[in-house]
Image 1 (cartoon, rainbow, N blue to C red):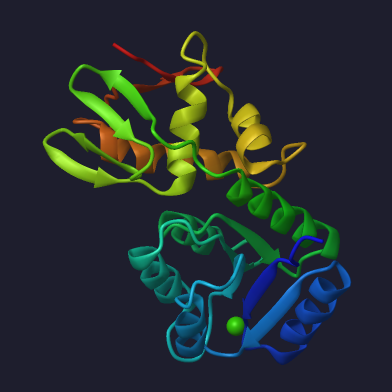
Image 2 (image 1 turned 180 degrees about the vertical axis):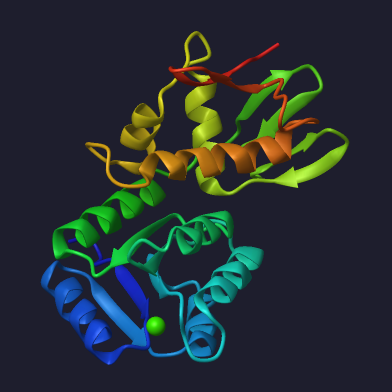
Length: 233
Ligand code: CA
């Protein structure tokens, strides 16, 4: 029998926290829960959770700071931010700090479980070892170390950024649409609010790492009306 995935809930609103515990237990997960950012960070850094559900407005360290500090030590820890409805800035900031995904409050149980399953599915797939993504003779990405050397700088990537680059690198013969990236990498069957922006934010982050001039990309180009394409030289 496989182990039940263990989820850490960091949420200060007691009703929401208790509701999350109930829902997750019902769906076969085990949980720990805390009501402040400092404890949340300590537990998150223990490395024993398959996923962290992280509220933004918290006593002590806020969710952004907790996410940021987790990412400084662990680029692969799956994190889903809990954001207030229609707080686009929160969503964007969370994703830029390296959260894998977000769920807007108030959320439906179905939506929450779908996203948890999608993030866990991806993290179990794992990244192929002993592999590089070659963009040119002088530019390649070391998949195992999530790193590369671009425009005179050493850069590190998040797991999600590597997945995007990997997917584009095996489809260099054509542009890949945002919907296709969402479907293949995020595991969404259909387009939902803000999700195409999620892709764009990740693309922008990758460009800042691999492009000498992110506004005039040489490798990761936009094909108008069609999506993104990786240009390998
Ligand atoms: Ca809160």
